[in-house]
Image (cartoon, rainbow, N blue to C red):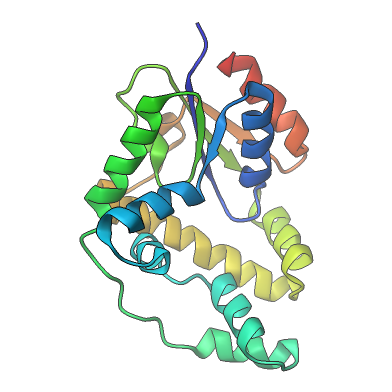
Amino acid sequence: MGHPVVTIARELGALGEEVGRIVAGELGYRYADDEIIAEASARAGVSKEAIERAEHRPSLIGRILESMAGLPVEPSVYYAQALAAPRPALPTGYDELIRDVVIETATAGRVVIVAHGAGICLANMNGVLRVLISATPEVRAERVATSAGVTLEQARKAVQSSDADRQDFLRRFYDLRHEEPWHYDLVINTTRLTPERAAALILSQAR
């Protein structure tokens, strides 16, 4: 029968985006992540940044990268400034809009939806394969350190901040106090698996 919709929830550094793109390419499906934000922002008449802020607390890694872009200084300096930067107040009222866009995107079918709590949002929709991509915190931190060019300790803090962000998002948008493995149909640990191997596991269930 197959699944016309695949949702991928992922932790920072777990390679979920890479896995999602492979799955979408192999199935010939759309890859939906940024387009969810773009559609929600168009409907609300606000910037994409406003929707992103509503979804997520500014993560440590995001603040690091923002500081890198704005200040030509050494890593130790921009990291300290990013860590100390105050977090702006989050806009509210966009949660229902984002959920509507996720549902409409899924209803169109033949799509891989990454992030946005799509697996939780679409839990009762037929034909949806809900996947969680995870890995050990240490391996995730090592990947973040390599990709972002920060120290391992900085990356560990980024991973911790991102994990707290995900839980905060799920609580605010879906009233989910504790994310559990049984919220998903398939949980994949990429600590030792390559994105290609992880994608193969998803494809075996999605087709």
